[in-house]
Length: 292
Image 1 (cartoon, rainbow, N blue to C red):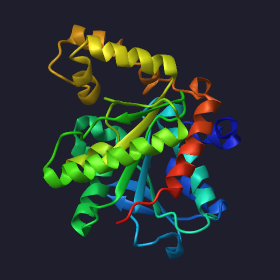
Image 2 (image 1 turned 90 degrees about the vertical axis):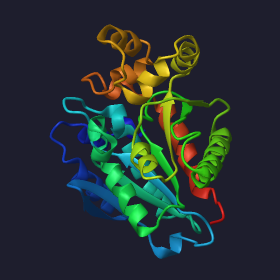
Image 3 (image 1 turned 180 degrees about the vertical axis):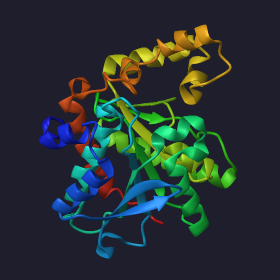
């Protein structure tokens, strides 16, 4: 299992050069990559051969941030998803036919607390917008090493102009269909912003997916119905709430999220079932095709 491997232990070590680790490990898999410097952030772009793409179908751009909060091992945020998608890259390298997958390992997601424009993915999205790359299906995976309930972010639903709404609603529907193929139980809920924020801010539809343990997901769903301000707190992190209220709403978050950005976000919190589910989900995504 990936998260019990020597690679995972090395990747969450405080002295790990995570960008170099990713490029070196991909190379050992026989997968080419390049480092793109945008706004002082170092993003890793996986380079599959042209034969992996068919222009008749949409490109599926997948983003997973490799940076982590200072002082945290970052096992779930976001090492688990990074290792899962690195492993997927290896499988895609020998994929039969066209998979149309573009993968970015992004830098600077944790900087987004100062404003979305500081987020590393914002630079990627701005570049996409400048180049006219606005029709991709953009998927963000964050904190996918704990739990078996896929949770699709509500961010972006109901926003933007008519063209954006149509494109985004179509992406949401396809994502829900995708989740249904791998899990009988999934939810669409407010979750903290990830790299999807940078793309949404640039007017490019993007969805974010995370995992939660079943009990936590159920409790969170119920609690949202009982506390009208909880959604606001989750999606912004810094609302007009008073300090005491912020503490109250923080304690209502799923335990998985309360472990993030702390020293407790370590390997012991992860579940092998999450990695099994993610392998199925990513494999299903590889075979999904949508006419361009």
